[in-house]
Image 1 (cartoon, one colour):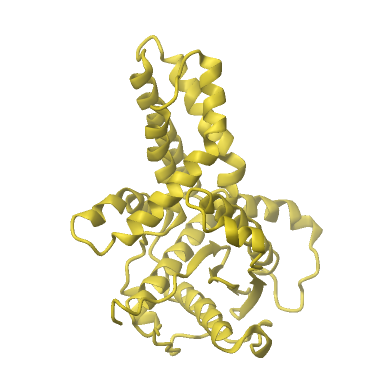
Image 2 (cartoon, rainbow, N blue to C red):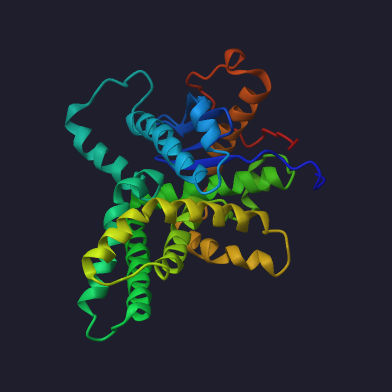
Length: 327
């Protein structure tokens, strides 16, 4: 594939026993059912005039994209949660398991965009209080901001490490790796076979995990521009600056992605890739099969239109022989 004909930018999200892929206008999920069959779910991306205008504004478009992703992602999460461990035809509610299943969904969402939205206040403010408690050891604006950023990073790494110990999240992280491998294979112009996909890196510059880390780094530099005393003003500043940190971090993520093929400059995105060593795992072949099926279905919809594509549940259980050359 020539550099003049870059493929469109696709994104994705790991789910319980599945993967969601999205393009400008479409999002598709494929999940592995209890009987080893594949099931699909489709949600269109509505291009609303206001949001389309806002997406053209730097530092604002990231917030809009995050909100839209959270809304669409929650629908795909719900679909995967309701069907992954149920035999086809038995999708009726099982009240005894509803509570535990809801807990699973929350656990998965916690490492994605949805949890970022709901947990941002705690993630921002808890480190502030921890740093303030050690003011007698690290007084002064510079020391306090550095200490606050250290606590923020430590909390992020600790949280991800703890949840990754659970069997469910471990499998989700493997699907996360499969998602990245499929996108890397497509962007490298390779046919989407299990062998080709497994040979790719499980890391990707545009990952939401990188975005989380950039909010820590970007936030630290932004905080140097505002006062830290008195303490109540510091709290107010942190709350008011949340959308600013999100907006700037999104631009930094896009910028580092644009530099990923440039020697030396590509290393600017490495901190985000290092965090992905925690949020992704090497997938199994059958998980890669699901990711390929999801991406193939998205390409099929883009080429033929959703009205011409069967998006209902499929009985396909093997897709390793499927080959879709990159455009």
